Length: 328
Ligand SMILES: NC(=O)c1ccc[n+]([C@@H]2O[C@H](COP(=O)([O-])OP(=O)(O)OC[C@H]3O[C@@H](n4cnc5c(N)ncnc54)[C@H](OP(=O)(O)O)[C@@H]3O)[C@@H](O)[C@H]2O)c1
Image 1: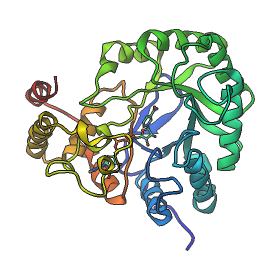
Image 2: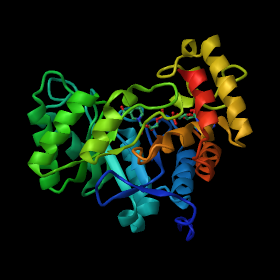
Image 3: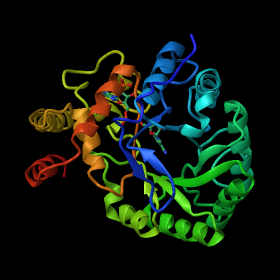
Image 4: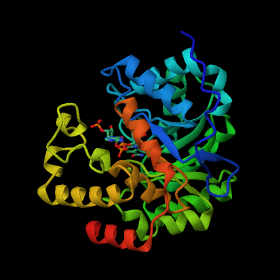
């Protein structure tokens, strides 16, 4: 059946300006790292994409290596995009990245111009797109000169293959250098994508200041610490959970201390009439330097739950202090 988007999709979503740019992003964005590979169920991920767009989510985040197998999330997204979303291209922000191992040999990884340009060409072919909205360098490369990686991003924009560029996993000092370089090149960095959640707070040690100083947006990934910051592990490890698969979220990360923290946070969330997932997302969005939070979901019901976080992104000082005591 032909997909027709919900005509009220923009009513309840919040849109936040991305740094000093002309772009606003939905306060929640959907990441396709897990659950969109060839190993996953097509109807499930198609439903997730429909629900996301119908709920006002305009931003879909990919990378060359998402799957498994690597590349398959882009191929699968591209197919559904062409089947269902083509008419909405101008309402959608699609991002992809390169920076991790993608193909054999010395040119399939890290940050050379050769790798970044070729990788985006491959991504565009897999998704059957003329351009992406945002192209990221996925991680800093300690061996390639920063100038070369940034010149590759600048080139890609000048070639019309991406409208904007972003950086991911760059720490504050190197991010600031890269922001400065891109600014000088005339291709200002649109957005930085760091890992940031109640359980992972390195960005508070300088990166958030740097993005603010340079007028760059910020989109935290793994805002639920891959599912830890939800109620799903309170009574053990469910068979259908990411921790049960154990590649990226390992069962031994779910220690008794972690469970105690999660229980205490869950109690605070309940007092706020929120699920823990909703509170964890709201906790990131309370900071206006955070443009959007980049969530993953394995089923539509998780998206329906998480999106309700927008009903309350305010915290009292007492709530913040109580949370701080638990997570510090
Ligand atoms: N730039 C980078 O280096 C980088 C790295 C990692 C991720 N990312 C991006 O960030 C996106 C999100 O990362 P992530 O998937 O780790 O994010 P996350 O939101 O922290 O975790 C997602 C997982 O949490 C669980 N979950 C989500 N909502 C839930 C809810 N309401 N109730 C209960 N459980 C819920 C699901 O786990 P189950 O699967 O167990 O059901 C889901 O797969 C990725 O798709 C990718 O686009 C970027």
